[in-house]
Image 1 (cartoon, helix red, strand yellow):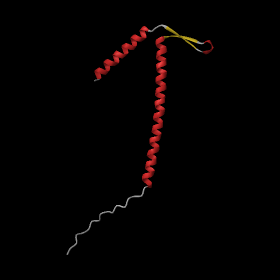
Image 2: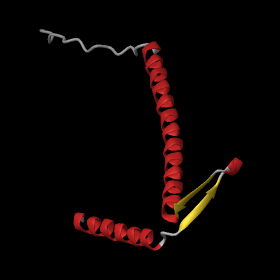
Image 3: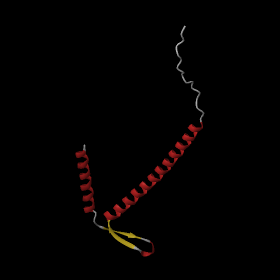
Image 4: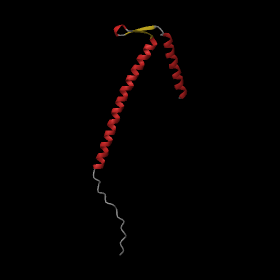
Amino acid sequence: MRLVMWILRLLLFFLLFGFAIKNDQLASLRFFFGGEWQLPVVFVILVSFSAGALLGVTATFASLLRQRREISRLKRQLDRAERSRPEPNVPVAEAQAPETL
């Protein structure tokens, strides 16, 4: 299974490397107030992908933190409820000596 994963990784790497080699034309990024950058298309795509991935990870991380806070709050609430619950009256079986006649 590890070999298959490494083959897939190498295949993906060479596919993306070939894509980068074929798209080396310059792209113009125009900003406000006359600012302009000229970068290869592959860098524009890489930066866009990285920004999207970072945004997705940030959104997921925020949701994860919110869920962890909710879980800890519910655990504290459960602990308080268990401590305030009265103990059930369970009779303790007393060892009785056998009666002699």
